[in-house]
Image (cartoon, rainbow over all chains, first blue to last red; front, side, top):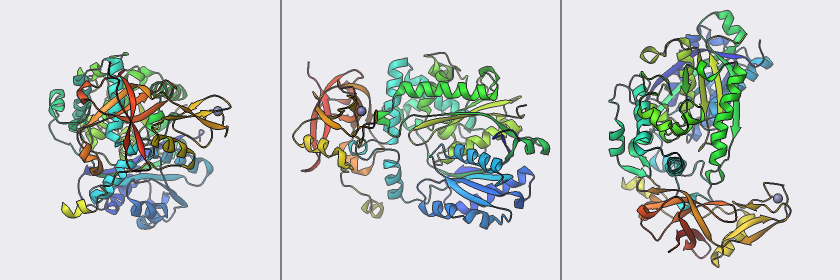
Length: 395
Length: 143
Ligand SMILES: [Zn+2]
């Protein structure tokens, strides 16, 4: 086996919906069984289970942390399991740990998964969680800040420096929703795609963020089966091979976060991960960017040099990142297009990366998809993790 | 909705103070804005830490800020804040840069939100939460 070489060989997912009657355990059964069935392995071949920690669901978190999932699923070959929490960067760490399980001989096949059900959490609990998570309780929270406001602060500065217009910013939503409307797992599946003008007509939550630029909290879950690259190749089925990785830490609180450090981190992580994978920018078939809010997408497009400097917003407005455009981008529509499932949107994006490389993305399938850039981040953007995935292993 | 509302905390949140940041909040009661300062490497530090984040020295002291600042960025909230902040809507949260080389989160007050801009000069003004806590807000410097 190549060093830390892993591949995703099976995926399972349920539609993201607001569905209180669908319990977390409903979702866990369906997603995990689908992923194992998709991999072609037997349930008892799964030797490790690593779950992305659900946010704001303490009961479920402790059930998963204390080993209930392999027991529920009857995974008789399971040797160990745990949960991992780095917010939206959690699943990236699950995959790293899956690589370690495999390399150290703990497990040959690892199930990585996530589930979140927001719709049964009480309103006070949701408010308390999302009001305070990732916000400093001494230097930020007493002033009345929120996640939305943090994004507004970032966006206003970016628009000031780059000249990106409100219409250009709004067009990011249009691009993301153009993918989402074709995605059966999206909360906006089959729903009309709002024009940038319609986005701007929606009410302001906080400047410059409009209602249609924010996220809808929803329920969802997904799972993946991970094996060594060597084993995936032997199995000879469609798979997604992890080829490169890079990460940078920025800051836990937004008040000390340096925007230049973030932008530079976006650039450096992309370059390092692509170099490790032995590919170049023009080899990337899909830029699968996870940024939770549309407002950060033009910043990322410029940092990745997919859009010229100062033209990030314009590229979205021209439809280049939309379905049918020449820059396939966040093909589940990121959180604004998918529906927000806590740390699960980034899990879903890994499943999408694998789905595209396996050629199973249906109407959204990007032609001749060979390499996918994928990023994740945790909290209010404390870090950026980049991975490069390919449909063939590196020689 | 009334049952749900009853269980929502409507009290004003107070800063969750660490022992080493107490002098900041003590000085705030007297209208003084302090910035933590490392006596070994001369770094100005915000927010206050137990040890200097630059050199890990514990030899930390405080300098008095002029209270002047420049708006780095801002966002005016109209909706979707916690119920405990509803009565303040609309309000403007900002990052402001102090000449001491540090950036703080604050609110911009005493002006129409429409008149706030990046690069605007502001000055500290204190908002009393209770007898123990005064928050450093900023208001435009009148030209
Ligand atoms: Zn120092």
